[in-house]
Image (tube, rainbow, N blue to C red; front, side):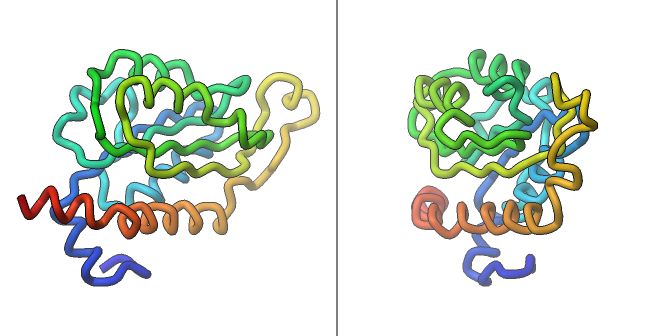
Length: 174
């Protein structure tokens, strides 16, 4: 049983089907976070180009590094191509060199809401960034995400289960 997850929620993992969609380009920052969340959820972890359908999933996470205040274009393109998903649960995650909370997930969140997703959580942390002008100084946030960030990502995943337990329980008992 995963650490920190009560037995009743562990049993739920078998019934709940989760997917984490992530694209991590430069340093693997976001992939580390995605793997931690996916492990906590017992979720499948795929790149955007590997996603054929989302209909079988109860909970879907979407994440990437942030590039000029937006998630990666491949992830945004995937969301744009998805069918309307009324009331399907989703969460958003990212890593970024600079954290501006109100701006970080705005573009992706807007697209998901337009498709009918119910956004049940957001996670972000700093990531090592050598993009644009940061390359000239050797990058910023070296060593990020660190073990603490990866641990918090796993805790975020477990919290998603706990906070949405009744929804998944009702679906699986119907």
